[in-house]
Image (cartoon, rainbow, N blue to C red; front, side, top):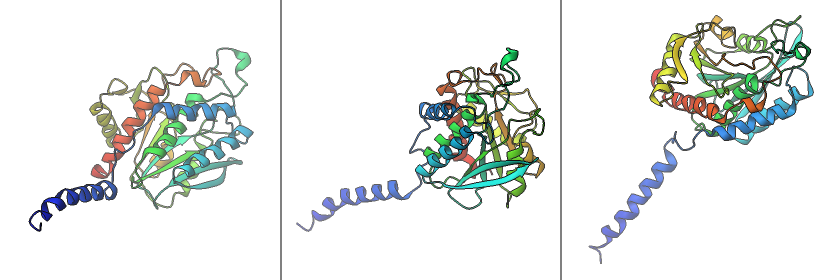
Length: 294
């Protein structure tokens, strides 16, 4: 009987070791990014109406973002401040102090659809399904699937999209956030206008070259190089600029080849869950590699 005991214990020991490894070691592939689930966040935001600063829909968007983040265990801090006499509200979601990587999206939509082909529409607010809601949706889905130890903070900025309007300017919320940032993160990634069904993400010319190369290499490794096009095309004033001005490496992921930009046609039917899926998968894989190159 005693000679057989080790043979009985061996499979039990193996099972216990396996359970320990599964439950104790970080599992960075446990959850997968779901573009369809991200798209539901686009629908929720656009259902509020245009999220122009100080509007009821704007307040609903803030509450929605807070609620969704808290569901997935993130600590959420509101940052209120003024720029050009306007009160702005940014949101920062963290799981650790001073995360070295910040992902940033703007949640406001534009006061005026001044690119609309119909002049009668040009004084009406933009629905902002792609320009605003898509970036927020990607971050909210990442909030659900990122492992607890991911070195990431999620930032939702206000007042990005109001340039060329009297009394306003572009990227006010990110300027407020960057100016108040008490530490120097290793990298910042802007996620903006990435839901277009015809997804073409070119390398933005102001962006940090090393960050740009690393993201595009990850996209190529995943087979998405037809969507992450390894060519420079635009130089954009976007939410990465205030971080670059502080000497923080930053990159702007944006698809500006979008026919409905700043028009009343920027609606949820123009946003593709598959495009959200592609961007989300690239970001999730890139974040998993972040510690190895930062």
